[in-house]
Image 1 (tube, protein in one colour):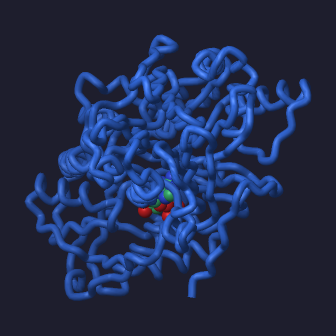
Image 2: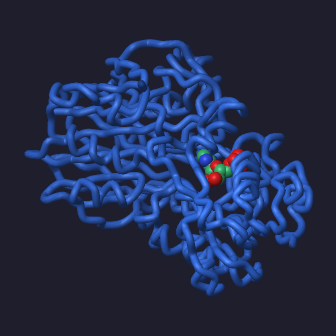
Length: 478
Ligand code: AMP
């Protein structure tokens, strides 16, 4: 039986290591049950974070918050939402993959500042957080957690003597890195996207109101109509005066996270003009052209490899089959904090369909290899089912560099492609063939937008500082 950890209202707890990979949601819709809609929005964004969830609602006078550890449905399993009445709300789901998870890092964060109450939910990682925290501490600031989100709140609060908007504009000059934010006060909903547009953030309409979400799938879920993505460097303020957009900083070179398309986002979302499913399918088609093999079936590692496997099958003419069954009730195995549990996790999550596999030459498609745990276990599983050949295809280039902007690609010592050659990886996962999608092939999918992405995890080309390039060499092996 699942252990339910209770939610809490604004408790002060001890810090732990923050790793933000989250989903944010905001709504301004007088006359609607905004708490419930935020709950549904977070449900749609659950894939972006399974560790904690929270909702803050404002009614013109005050902001109320409820948050806790666990899945959205676990945190709000009782009547907590009934106590959250108002006409605007924000919500957050958090994903952390290392260290103990702790309630202190659950969001939204809620504070009092010079202008009243301020709640904030953040997706992304700042790159100058250590510097900013030291500067704030030197002038007497105190922190409950070690999250960079709390640093953002402090920076905003300090600059907001003449109003929140001015505070935000000033803060965006100091804060560096990846941040998609939703902010709530007693009567305003604010959304902010960093000047590079690392993490997604979009705007929709709901009747006379507005909705903000990390991904458009959350707009669909609450019945909102997609209007547009927020521009990099844009602030959107929604209040009883309507919607105001402030283009604070000139957008820098766009650096949308390409890994959102590869793995992180939901296939039904449209992010910065591209449907995730369509992009993934195209990745599979490119894979098939780059790595044509003689095989009997193409199977995906569900769900992350499904769209690319379909693309591979379409382009190659090799039949698509479901060779691995996923237990839908198990969360992402990657999230488990130690290797032994991760190993077991793969078996709990995926089981082979012997009839599809026995005696076959198989192309197995997944989105990526991080540490190599999943592919190693899966290749062994396939062999146990009498598979004759396994060709492992990845719809991403080798991940050789850590991400500092909000995706947990673990540290470089753990990244198998940073440590081993392609041939060594092939041998270590036990496949007959191994092919990673080339970076060129990946970028070609986006045509003239090809320069609008952050590809640091593949080539070490960091859009903001932290440059540490590495040569990954060849891409394919048979
Ligand atoms: P690994 O088993 O460590 O090689 O991880 C690879 C698996 O984790 C693949 O099946 C991916 O779908 C998934 N994955 C890739 N990147 C991430 C990430 N940043 N967070 C969680 N899961 C991931």
